[in-house]
Image (cartoon, rainbow, N blue to C red; front, side):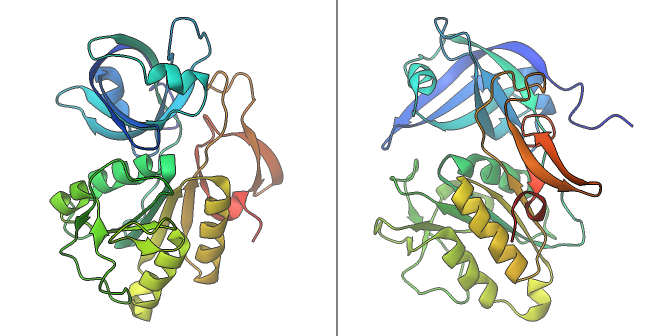
Amino acid sequence: MTEPNRNTIHVEDAIIIDHQAFDGDQFIMRLHAPKTAIEAQPGSFVHIRCAERLPMRRPISIMRTDPQQGEITLLYKALGEGTRALGERKVGETLSLMGPIGKAFRFNPNKKRPLLIGGGVGMPPMIFIAEHLKDNKDIEPFVILGSEVPFPFKVQPSQHIINGLAPEVIGTMPLMEDWGIACRLASLQGYPGCFEGYVTDLARAWLDGLTENQRNDVEIFSCGPHPMLEAVAKLAAEYDLPCQVSLEEFMACAVGGCAGCVVKVETDNGPAMQRVCVDGPVFEAKKVFTI
């Protein structure tokens, strides 16, 4: 049987519709990329040519899609030459992209309390999942977003009451509030309204505020820096919860040809080296992290 992430990759010229800069060298870019918008699933990414002078593309996670309008939205941080060049691109310009690429997150219909944990540029896949779930009234997601630079949105008070959290921890992402999804923000930088600590500390407080039956209804999804994902995997193992993580790796081809993004994965047949681009980027946490 053909895997759902196969035969979905397109090379298309995407037009920049909107491009906004935020503190901490963060950017949100909206693109008209209809082929990608139709096929993308939470966990998908695109491989973008950032500038004509740079032949190597850069992988960037998809944060939102609008298949009806043929649009996708990306959040990225300018860290190296490629993403800095991308930050200079203007509305109306055309970018060459390949996408959508990668295996998406898989959802257990019997788990009604997905816990979504995103850190830094790992926030976009969690926002994409939230958008994917927002109209399902049987699901009660809780979203945790963490950042050590100012969030790329205006933090606002949440109307959702979360058991186990101090009353001053009320900061949320406006989009989540619009969608009716409970969300809290975490940072070590003392931002008003945010939880002072790691995303896993906030997740632990939320889990401890649930009954045993409610915790049995939780599955965890996460994306972010490697140390954060390892901590999330340990938290999931401690509470005996299923957990999927989306890995961040440097990529050359992003279509499985170069094998430059391989990671060690535990399989039914023993350890194997698998490609983050097409065998992932989503993996079961227990298969990539030794707990």
